[in-house]
Length: 346
Image: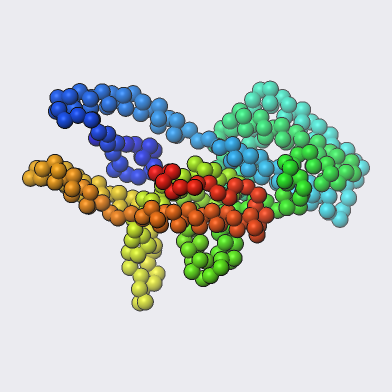
C-alpha cells in the first residue's frame, strides 16, 4: 500500500493506493511491489505538479471572456443611456485615450504582458464565481487583449453616434447576437437554475428532491454558470454523490426540542465515513487470528454504506431536469444531458 497525497486523492485523508500484485508467491510479490513503488515514486512529483497547476477549461475560458465583454458593454450602454451628453472635447479626449490603449494592447500582445487585461479578467471571474489562475496564461491573455481592442473600437463607434447594439453585433456569438438585451443580463447561474427548477416542480415532493440534488451540486461545484458545466464535471459530481453515506444528513442531533445544531457538509460526511472505513480495515488487516478468506469477508461487510446506484441515477436525472428547466424557463441554450448511464463515471 502507498498513502496518496491529498491532492491526488481528491481531498480525502488517509487514502491509500491499493493494487493487486497478481501473484500467490511471496517472493514474487516482494519483487513486483518494489517495482510498482519505484514507478509510482518516480511519477508522483509529475502527477502532483500537474494537478497543482490551475487551468481553465475551454468552456470556462469562453464564459470568462463573455463576462468581460458583458461588463464592458454594460458600461458603454450606461453611457449611451445617460441623460447628459458628452461635450465634443470630452468625446475627442475619450477617443484618443481608446486609441492609445489599443496601441498599448498591441504592444502588450507582442511582449506577452497581460497586466492591462488582468484586472478585467479577475473582475469578470468574480461575476461568474470563477477563479482566474494567475499569472494569466498566454492563450487567455492574448484572447482578452484582442477582445479589449475590439471593445475599444466598439466604444469609439458609439462615441461617434452609432447604437451599441449595431456596433457590438460583430462581437457577439450567434445566439447572443440575436438578443443583445438577454446577453447583457448575464450568465444563467446554477443557483438560479435550481431555484427555477424548485419553483416549477410538478409537486412539492419533486421540488424537495430538486432542491436536494441542487444543494449537493452547489456544494461540489459552487455557484457556476450552467454554460461551463461539462460531461467530465458531471462524472466527477456523480462519483462524489456515490461516496456520500446512505445516512447522510440524519446524524445532526436536531429534534423538536433542539433545532440549531449545525449540519455537516457532504464533504465532511464523506471524509468521516472514509476515516471510519480506514480504521476498520486497519483493525481487520492487523488481526492475525483471521485467515485471508476471513479478512476478505470481513472487509466486504464493514464499510460504511454509501448511496446506491439507483439513488445516484435519480440525482443524475434530476440534474438533467434542472438544466432542461433552465432551457424552458430561463433561456439557457447549452447542453442539457451529459450522461446516459450512471455507471459511466464510476
